[in-house]
Structures are given as structure tokens and as C-alpha cells.
Amino acid sequence: MTDFKSSLNEECGIFGVYNYTQAAELTLHGLHQLQHRGHDGAGIVTYSKKNLLNHRGVGLVSTVFNKGIEENLFGDIAIGHVRYATAGKSEIKNVQPFISQPKKQEAPFAYAHNGHIVNSDTLKTELRNKGIEFQTDSDSEILEHLIYEGKHELFEDNLKSALSRIKGAFVYVVLKERQLFIARDPNGFRPVSIARLKDSYIVSSETCTFDMIGATFIHELEPGELVKIDDSGIKKEFYTKNTNLSICSMEFIYFSRPESTIGGVNIYNARKRMGEYLSKQDSVNADIVIGVPDSGIPAAIGFSKESKIPFEQAIIKNKYVGRTFIQSSQELRESSVSSKFSVIKEVVRGKKIIIVDDSIVRGTTIKWLIYLLKHAGAKEVHVRIASPPFKYPCFFGIDIPSTDELIASKMNIEEVCSVIGADSLIYLNIENLIKSINLPKTTLTNNGLCIAYFTGNYPIDLCDCAINL
Ligand code: 5GP
Ligand code: MG
Image (cartoon, rainbow, N blue to C red; front, top):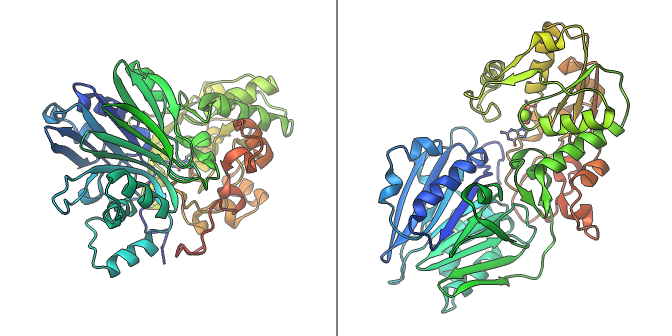
């Protein structure tokens, strides 16, 4: 059985380059822009003169690539990865991209994964029973062994049958000789897009990277799609027709950068609309609207616009304190939250304040901020959250803790309000969340979004996945 408290819950970001003279350097640039998707490890693999060259390490992109190492990664094709793992699992062997063990005189291939495979325990047991040994603790490695199980002559046919056996959330990039493959799972949980840069192709988890390197977006993969890029160009096909779009709503709420676009929807605009709808849900008499940096700010701006209550910057975030969310203990989380934020007293003193954040998970952040605001002389603090209460764990690659750590799964809204010390607390409702994101897929369930954290209705049947619900 998978124990989600100790398992590897990976969010991650991927980047790929085809036909660019210094592919590794461009990939490094891309990984810097995707750093928010994973702090625990980074790596790049290139293909040069029939060899796969690689460098990987634990930590931030700037730590791993601190000596100009990318200059020795020759080749015009590259894939890169940033990894997010829960605390304690940052071992080098789990840092991607992985390189396959060569088999039957075949050239090895490199691959990287973003997401979480829900039938990994079942598949691993099946493969181990056939004598296969795993080199890593990661669910991502399954792909390699499934490819080698394939009986087809062509690598890409074995890749397609391997992908069809994997259940869950995945974007895979696979580099095999002069071929670059990109695959998105049948639910399209995680985003991935392709752009052109003159004669080169760029692949990225998020479109924000394209603008920064001057590339032009050409295509977001559809669920169940496999794209192959080689010297003859780009080929798109579907490895399965059994698809059911359910893009992770957390990509819009918290995870992706505001400059990025998923499914045709810009993240900043979606967050702003969340604030607007939140403001329409009730009216409260207040002097100012403030947002929790960084991801709560667009929603606070939307809230202010709709309510006509002025927006102020009252909370300052220290840029040099890392993410508090992934600290291993509650004490560590509390101490880093307290060094992460400070309040401008002159803005809040004597005021009735509306504070907007994107989400409450354990309640650590908002509780501390309310304390700081009241300590600085705020008269009232009304909390508005730009997503519905998080009640259920995620099995598709977002690091949502187990239910007993989710404050909204243990308490009702009044209880949460009183524990965090707020004067009132309102969450965006599910209907308004879907309207705010506004994916143009109106014929699909939830407009093509996964909202399982709020409803407990998972878009994939998990009963044969050896998961403790
Ligand atoms: P809490 O302090 O309530 O446990 O977490 C809420 C804060 O964590 C919010 O400010 C939100 O921006 C952030 N957050 C929400 N989901 C995630 C996540 O999946 N990963 C990380 N690192 N932060 C998150
Ligand atoms: Mg936050």
C-alpha cells in the first residue's frame, strides 16, 4: 500500500531543446525559470556524438550548475528537470533526468517526468516479479522497464504501449538518439507546451519560459498525445483515445507562474477572477484589501477591483527565505514563516482589513499573518481565500499532505476561523472556482478541471492502485 506521508510526492518541471547549438545552456536558462516547480534537485542530459552526457545534483538549479558545468554538456539536443520531493528524500539517485540501463546492444535513452503515477506499486511488483531491479525510489523509473518489455521493433511503438499501461499524472520527455518525445497523460493533469525558436524546438512545463528566451508558442499537448521531434520535423499523434481532460486546478490556484498559460487561460487573469468572484460572494465593510505574497496578490487585486475597496501592500515577503511549506516539522514551518513575512505598521494600524491568500493548507501562514496584523494595530482582519477548502489529498503530483494535516478536513469553517484568529473567513466556492479559471471546455465535467482536493471525487478510478484513501 502506498503511504502518502512517506512517499515521493513530486511536482517538478521539465524543459527540452531540439536543434540548438548550446542546448544545455538554453536548458539551464529554462530550468531557472521553472525553479518554483521544484527545489530539491536539478539535472540536464544532452545528446552529442552518439553519447548521452549528463549532470545532476541535489538542491537549487544555481547550486547544481554553479561551475559552468553546462559548458561541458555538448550537443544540440537536451532535456532538463527540476525536482520537488517531500523532505528527507533528496538523494542524488532520485534526481532526474534518468538514463536507462542499456539493453541488447541498444543505445540508452534519457527521460524525465512531472507528475505522479498512481499504479506504480502495482506495476513495480509486477516488474520485480519478473526479476527487474529498480535503480531509484522514484515512480518515474517504471517507464524505462515498461519500454524494455515492449515487443515492437520501433522504439516509439514500445514507448506508446508503455505509456498506455501507466495510470496517473505524467508529462514525460524522452531523448533517444536524435529523437525527442513528449507525452501527456490521458487526463492532462500536468501542463506541457512546445515553442519554436528559429529552427529549434523548445519544450517546457510552463509557457512563461518561452517569452524569456524569445521563443514562440506553437502547441500545448492534448491529453493522451505523443509528440515526436526529429530531424524531419514534428509529428503529433495520440497513443490513446481514452482521454478525459482534468487539468490540475492547483496549477491555476497556486503552482504555475502568473505569466504562464494553460489550456488557453493565463494564470494571472484566472487568479484575478478568483478574487473578483470571491468578492461577489458576500460584502464586508473594510478599509483596505491586502494580499499574501506572492500567489495571493493577483486575487487580492481582483477582490479590490470588484469590491472597490482600495488595494494596499501591507505584507512584505523576504525573498531570501526558502519555501516554508516543505519544511519537515511544524516547528520548522512556524519559524520559517515568521522570518518570511513582515508587516508595514503604518498601512494597517487602526484599519479594518481584508486579507486574501490563494489557499489554506495547514493554516500556519495565515494564522501567523493575522497575529502580525493585529499586533501592528489592525482593528479587524477578514480572511478571504481564493480556493475552496482543501479537504482531500492529491494523488496526481501536488504535495498536499495527508488528510490529518489539512486543517479544513478536520474542522468546519467557523472552527478554522477561530483557530486562525480571524474576524471572518470565506472561501471561494467550487462553482466560482470553475468560473474563474474559465477553461473553454464547457461540455466536460468541471470544464476539464481536476478539483479532487475539494470534492474527494478523483477523475481516475483509484481502486486498483494500491492507495490508502
Ligand atoms: P499553510 O501555511 O496553510 O500550510 O499553507 C498555505 C500557504 O502555502 C499558502 O500561502 C499557499 O500559497 C502555499 N501553498 C499552497 N499549496 C502549496 C503547495 O502545494 N506547495 C507549496 N510549496 N506551497 C503551497
Ligand atoms: Mg502563499
